[in-house]
Amino acid sequence: MKKPINVNKHFYGTTTIGEKGQAVIPIEARQNMDLKKGDKLLVLGMDSDMIVLSKFSKLEQFASNLSEHLDAIKTIIKKNKIK
Figure 1 (cartoon, rainbow, N blue to C red):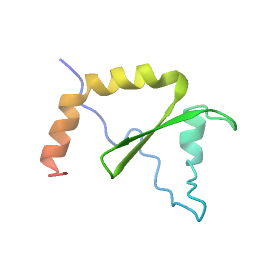
Figure 2: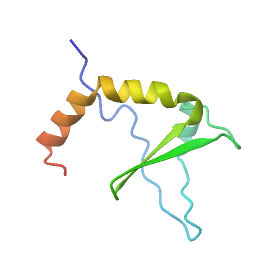
Figure 3: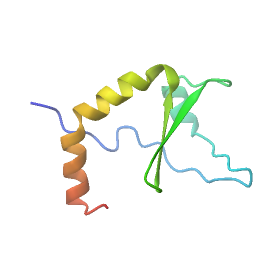
Figure 4: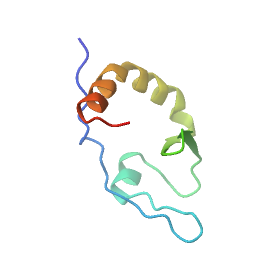
C-alpha cells in the first residue's frame, strides 16, 4: 500500500515574479535541494497555470515519484475541488 503524500512536507512558502520575470527560490528549498549558483533547472509547464522546477539531474527521479503518487494527488485535487 502506498503512503499518502504529506502536502506540507515540502511547502517552502511563496515567491513573487519581479520586473525581469525572475523569481527567488526560498532559501530553505535551495538548502534542502542543494541548489547552487549556476545549477541548471528544467522549467516544466502544464496548461497555462502550473510551473514545475526540477534539477536537470533529477528529472527521471521526479517523474517516477510523481507517477507513484498520482492516485494520492488525484484524491487531494478531488477533495479540494481543484481544477
